[in-house]
Length: 113
Image 1: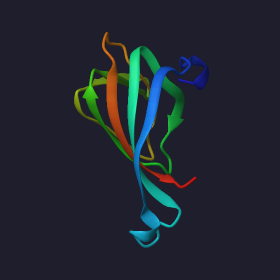
Image 2: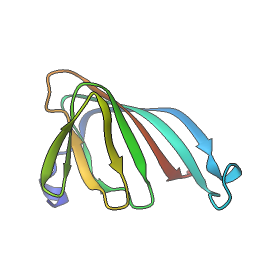
Image 3: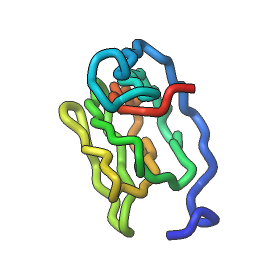
Image 4: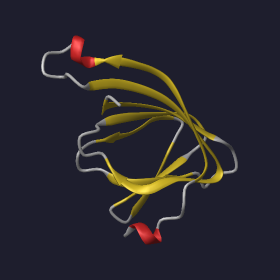
């Protein structure tokens, strides 16, 4: 699927909950941080665009609702509970096809801004 066929992002709110500077914690991690975010996707909401996680590994835990993860032409529903890993091979976009607000906790390692 190319980016032109992915719906535009809508109905998404992202709140930064916490960060930890990994450079002072682990040798070789200078310029990286561990980040935790609360992501809310309204019914009918889309979290795009199509994006990858090269150099930005993460894990997702769904607190409420169901989130559909689209990758490699396959749509997989998750929630509530452990969601999916986001590794260097992940290229995807997300949506909430359900009738209730979907809420996830996203934890990833990112370059410090």
